[in-house]
Every structure is written in C-alpha cells, then in structure tokens.
Amino acid sequence: MALNLSSYSAVQNNTFVRIDVPGYQVLRFSDYHKEYSINSESYDNLGNLLSITNTSSELRASPEQVTLAISGISTPSVSTILGTKLKGSDVQIYRALFDPTTGALLSVSSNPTIKFRGVVSNFSIEDELLEGAQEGTVQLVLECSSVVELLTNKVVGRRTNPIDQKALFPGDTSFDRVPALAKSNFNFGAPQ
Image (cartoon, rainbow, N blue to C red; front, side, top):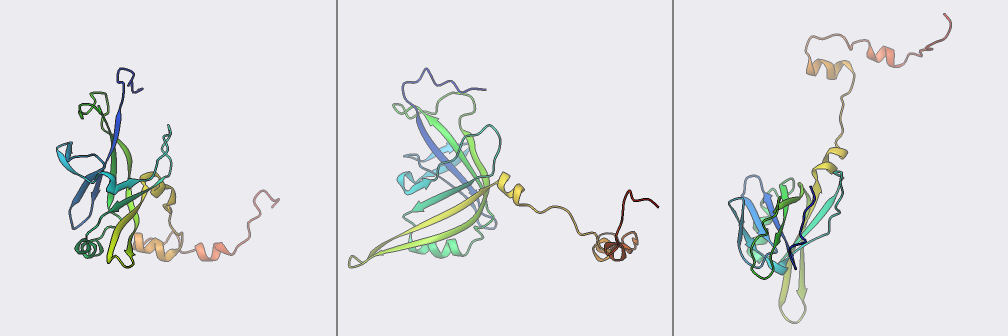
C-alpha cells in the first residue's frame, strides 16, 4: 500500500529507537526535539546527539547493518554501559512522520512504522580528549545487525555420527555404522 503524502506541503522525518537490554531496562530515545510517546512508551529526546546510518528501502527483506551513535555520554554512564549486557540486546527503530509547522504526527496509515529490527552485534565507546582544554567527549557507537542478517549467518543442521545421535536419542543405534560407511566407496549405477 503506497503512502500518499501529496496533501502535505512539507514533512518532517524523525527516528525513534527502542533497545531492550536484558537484565537492565528498556532504553527509548529519538532525534525528535522533545520527549514523545509512541505505543504508550515515552522516548527521550536526544536531538542532534543521536546519529543513525542510512538504511536502504527494498521490497524484500535483506541483510543489513545499522550503526547508532550517541554523543554526550556522561562519565558515570560509561561504567553503567560496561556493566550491562548490551551486546545481543533487541533493537527496534521506528520512523515517524510529522507536520513541521504544527509538530503533530501525520494521520497516515502505518505512521510510525518499523524501519529496522535486529540486535546489537557490537558496541564501542569512543573517548576524545581535547588537549589543553581539559574537556572531552564520550560517544557510544552501537553496531546493529538485522534479523535477516542473523538468519543468513545461522548455521543449521547437525552432525551425523553415533555420539551426537546418542546425545539426542539415547539408546538409538541407527548411526552406529556411519564411521565405517564414511570410508567406503560407492559406485552407484555401476554394473554388479
């Protein structure tokens, strides 16, 4: 279903990020200029302190990575970040369309919509100290992999040997001859 925005003279695009950190809490923040609620959840405004790499718009789901960078991290927050299990946390990124003159959410179908769904695959903390000024900046960079990328990297199947078969099905002897058969030569279709 196509999104019809022809009746609007201008549209403001904002991004809302939801990260569910296991054993800690759900983090919600956006690049919107004020705090805003979506789906009864309040998102803190980070404004220009949040940057997100571009994503591609495709008809099919494809493997993709997104990098989130949050600037202005306070020094006590760094120890909190390092103490949580941020890697593997679920990430959802929503795109919301607003009327720039009124600041109201546009009443079009699927607004806001999910732009990205995945997990935090890696993170880094970048610290830049300005020499002589005794000031510095700390930035948290999150590398997120999409659900599709996780599925394409997943190794499926199992080993066909007697040890693994007995681990799954104790007492089953159907794979006991596999080691002997593995070294055999079969000439399928050859005359007997």
